[in-house]
Image 1: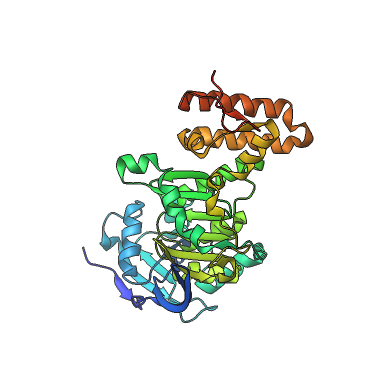
Image 2: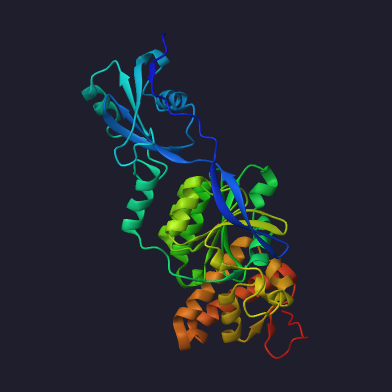
Length: 378
């Protein structure tokens, strides 16, 4: 079968040059870096708008034909008679519309695909700039703050690794996690898709309510795409950290939304692509919070411990399974929501579950406040 006639296929993207702040072992320096280009591509069938997908420009004809085949629209390349790449009037420098001419009537295509259109992997804008502007029209840019120490951000991937049991077993999953400004892990989720893992952890945030208070940092195990930053923006999370690199459109959105975007977090080094005002090379108050090992226990849990007169060690906390820690965070949120009545029913539920799980995992019960050396036994 003949291949389609290709008209004005976009050139391959070589990368976008961006300014950044590089922090390495506490030292800050201005730098530049090349990031992968990410732009939307609208795909039309016989002039009918079918879907918008994010991609790196280059080999777009292969992308369109491959996607049509994957979605069952065509069986072979010869069904695409022509493929015309055109430009959107709002950004004429981007060839971001691909119109595939198929040898079937439009009514037949719409009847077949109208209820099964491919979901877009981003917002429904037609070009990079328009996509960001449309999103910002619906959502306000984030307010200033908070400020987080660079060393805290650099330590997040290692803390996430301890909450990835399926990845340790299979080596084949992405992860996303929420942290507070002290670097305390609030929740982590795994999935074969990076975006799914992000949706899972943001869904936990909505369901957890008060227990998710203080969530300010989203960490993803791979790269930061436009969609990852978009999800964080909609959720009101000001800081996005990626183990790998961001895309060009992710950087653009983060800057326009006044978010902080950090990438290449490895060892004591990281790159700040947007919002460097939220990243401090040293702790703003000068205190060495790392000297307090209990900073790794969620703040809301520590508050509930104080309210219920209980005390646990960092080793006790780490002995719990992830689901048990998350359950305690939720119960602690209920204690906080109860206010002055938090030592009644909500406090009793928290204390009972805490005692049960700590006893099961360590062989001893939580210690009472004011008696730091004594370990209760059942």
